[in-house]
Length: 296
Image 1 (spheres, one colour):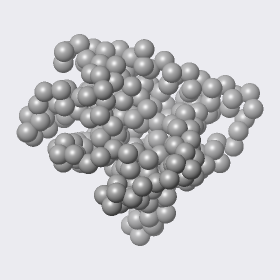
Image 2 (cartoon, one colour):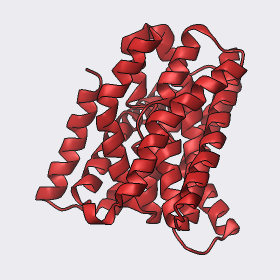
Image 3 (cartoon, one colour):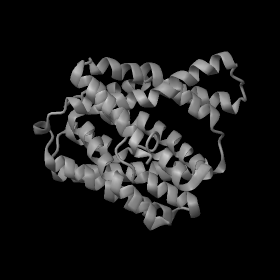
């Protein structure tokens, strides 16, 4: 089953943190600032732009904006603080469509479906590393500062890695093998590192600091409302067939592991975000196969 490797990597981080006790933020910063830009460059450089990009882009943007509105409405009804609300947005809006979603799509739909999943992963990565970082930044303080939030986004190397990948592809710039090989080595190590950081964070969670009401709201938003919104968007957009099914399934994926790094980096309720990631991932063992059965 595709979820088992992810859980094993998380377990390595969990056990390592319990036994050794690493300084988590240093490992998180290494992945975020040194490794992730190489993954972004390779992803955008190697996946050619197609017509489907436009439809998937519109879908992802509308899904992101709609879920932000829904989460903000629910958070304000609960009178959540700015930090809590930002953590809820990180947990409920951004799904694990990459290292978790793409293997499942490959298993269920084959290589044709996998190509669609890669495209969505690229777009989701961009949204998560712009909109996601924005909310992580404004949640790091009770005082809202637009300039500092925008500067936080501008300082993230992944944005420039992605831009370089797109430009190199559009300009048909060949990357020599002796350069692409180290890029690929670092890119391949990025996702496991992110999962290890998640395991480390889970090992330090104090349950008493995670309110059940906040967690329940995130679970409902992520596992039920997000796929329902996805179905509604599919009905509005000229999308059907296999692509429609793949987008709905990816929308129902658990909370993205990357959000744990963002919350840890900006101190935006990391316990709530990482615990939400764990709970939604565990629940997805049941919900994703069920959704696959319904759509098939």
